[in-house]
Length: 109
Image (cartoon, rainbow, N blue to C red):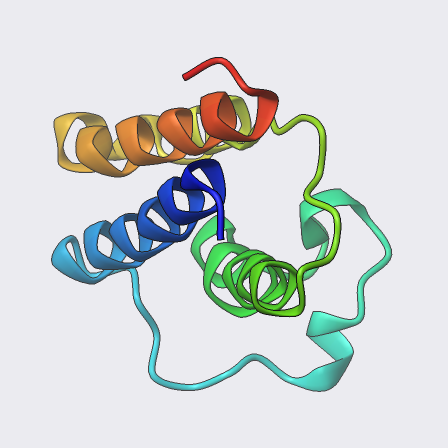
């Protein structure tokens, strides 16, 4: 596995760790209906943390494990900044982790 893939995998683990650290990691999966939204980021059915935990992280891990092509760009931090604005500094480490993921995906290490 090349270094970029390893760095992305590590970043995914860091995102999960930060979510757990600030209490944004849920113990129960949303319903299949809520997970099946066709809207970007499932904005009509899921919170940002639900989308990260139940859609984004599993899909990215599957892409890495299967050797499929990675996305060429990511703008998750911008969406998360809006979602977590009320959290202030509490979400800073998570936002930084998401920003680092965005840069790794686009190749802007």
